[in-house]
Length: 100
Image 1 (cartoon, rainbow, N blue to C red):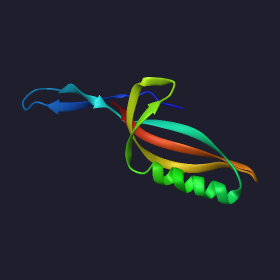
Image 2: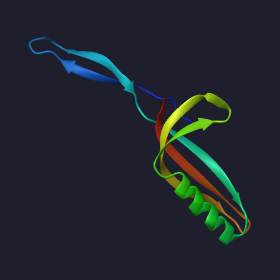
Image 3: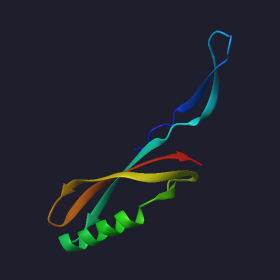
């Protein structure tokens, strides 16, 4: 899931004048969510989960394989377990960022 980035504006009041001027000021951050399927025994999946957590810490460039022309500067904001079974689990990864 990828949300659409909304325009951000800066309002400036001018002393002695009515109203405000509104200037474009970039875009709001967008939220990007992924569902990740991890297969294996519980100990193997714990190792994979720790590797994913470590790999995704900090700010990174994110490029979608289906649209390599779009690059996002993102930071992971959430990781949750959606399903947990004996041989697999599904996790949701949430990122926030902006298009470069």
